[in-house]
Image (cartoon, rainbow, N blue to C red):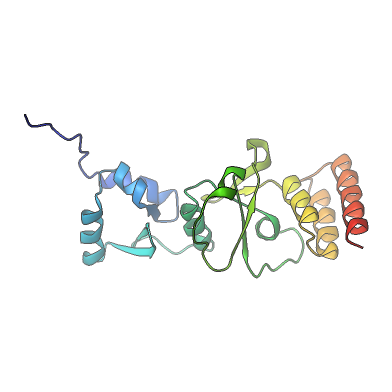
Length: 195
């Protein structure tokens, strides 16, 4: 007896919709959910409709380039579980003069046990980031300013940059006076612990 496979027909509009919300990028999993098999993806690669950004991540070629598309690729690499944090989040929030040499991404604590190849230039942190501690930056999630500042203090980011970031966050109304006091206290404890 023959069994019928529950195969979804390729739906270009569905795939385009996913890619549109992610600066033109999508993963093989997302493509499969839109009915695109690996052989069909390879056909579109060969025809030039798509390009491979990295293993398992593709881009529709007609999307304009964006300023932070490298972050979208890394976020898709993390299976959309990561949240940009620490120095990367400081830069995205435009807090301080930080110029991160690497991208910082926080993955769920349960990922600490996983084995995987980390892309070069990526620094991983492992912690659970609750919904109130995250926000969107374009297509990707980033830690909220208060969480970003706390993470930066805990990770011993240069004290001068953290001081500047706290001042800017308070001036822009991103944190309260009580938050500023607590962060200054955390920063003082962190400095004492490292001396």
